[in-house]
Image 1 (cartoon, one colour):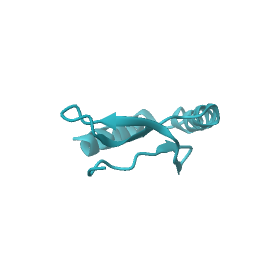
Image 2: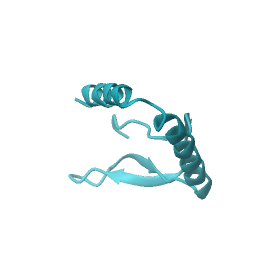
Image 3: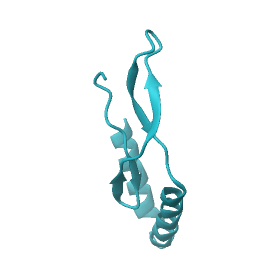
Image 4: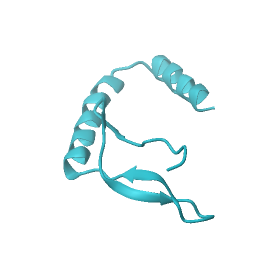
Length: 77
């Protein structure tokens, strides 16, 4: 494999390794890496974590939410 990063799922604050599908180089069809597949348990855990996170987020002031979103946008840029 080339310099493609090892991808994992980030669920409920933890990294999880899973089997997945190969990512192919379109130029020569060599395998660059693997994209992990989430299990039903991973999805259930992610939904539960999102529900818990929303409980905190909905009680966060609009000003603080704006700061967090602007900071996330800076990081993405």
